[in-house]
Amino acid sequence: MEDNEIEDIEIDCLLEAISRCHGYEFRGYARASLKRRILNRMTQQGLTRISEMIPNILYDNESFDHFLTDMSISVTEMFRDPIVFKSIREAIIPKLKSYPRINVWHAGCATGEEPYSMAILLAEEGIISKARIYATDFNNKSLAKAEKGVYPIDGIQKFTRNYIKAGGKKSFADYYSAKYNSAKMKESLKNVITFANHNLMGDKVFAETHLVLCRNVLIYFKQSLQNQVLALIRDSLVNRGFLVLGDKETLQFSIVENDFEVFDKKMRIYRKKRNV
Amino acid sequence: MYEAIVIGVSAGGLAALTAIIPELPGNYQLSVLIVQHQVADASDFLSEYLNEKSSITVQEAIPGEKVLPGNVYIGPPNYHLLVEKNRRISLSVDSKVNYSIPSIDVLFESAADAYQKKLVGVILTGANSDGSQGLKKIKKAGGLTIVQDPVTAEMPEMPKAAINATTVDHILTLRKITQFLKSLSHE
Image (cartoon, rainbow over all chains, first blue to last red; front, top):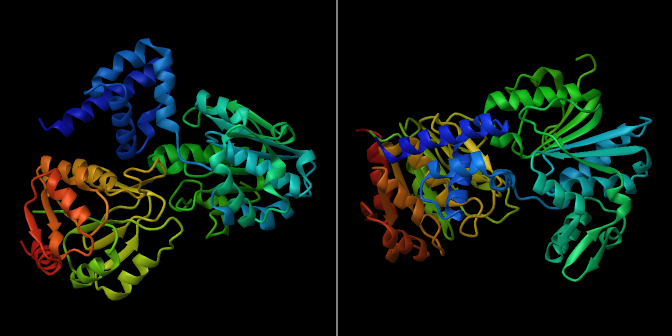
């Protein structure tokens, strides 16, 4: 049997162990990048076989937390893809202003840069007082970082450039206080964000939302899991609510394709139809 | 016999790809996947440019899309490009590999898993060492390895790194690489 076929067996066993022991269904993930992450994790642990990871996963919760972190970390930054935030500011926010309450959901918020960006945007558009931002992830370590809202100072230059490109109206420095080598986001932003553990692979709808950002999450999933997550998002959104995907993601060919209209094709902004 | 070709190229890539891709016929029987290192905010210029010049269809890779024969897929800037065993495209925004996203190693390693012996790996001009580990994996999986002759490459480092990392089946000039790739379609 070829090495790569044996590795496949090992990954199947590992994912089965994770599913039955911890309830996370990584079998819905696209295999190629999942395998890369698993192999990286294996190397970091000083192991040479994927199957050697299984005892740790089964018996050592801390080790499993570590595994989860490595499986979920994606590169993120404040106002990532600034033109998307500019579109949200200019095209979506005016349509949300008439609601008495506005709920925004960041599905897969990782270390929190995106929800803080959203809080800044809502503040500048004058609707932060009636807004609530739900920032969810399945990874508690990421969530803890997000909740802290402290970021390395070397990232700030990039964040500031993004903020300006996204149509920022003030100075980005108004939103954090610098201390030593880190920047701490202002409490007024943090106060509107609810950080919570939510697992897109199995958990249910938890709030009625008006705007959902789920960017570069679906690219890691197989079609069936994509459909499951998109149905969850659809059910969470109010009629005429908005969905923003990552810049290579689309609803085309998904089971919710007909439940949404394309609001801005280039920015990957979709709007839920009225009577879905 | 071969089903797909993966090409990795960095500095000097536009000229090198322009020498190869437009020469492939419209009814070419293999799939071609390309990682060209690009600046982060590059547009999809490369695929549009090559498509205009070629009879084979060149497009930016879309996640979930089926990889078809006679099509060229180029990894978009800022995303790693991977291919799944079921011959579908995956993208990821994981950390940089070899300081690069997209990374040639990431494409080559996933393609080696997916296509095994039915894969041809090609390393062209570049000023770093990305792709050398991926080419090694292609060789190990029984695939065919081709590297542009460093003497004739605009930037020799990447071809040299690949040659040092593994057994390379053919070290060729761009013109010879083009002829060779064309010949694969008629076997």
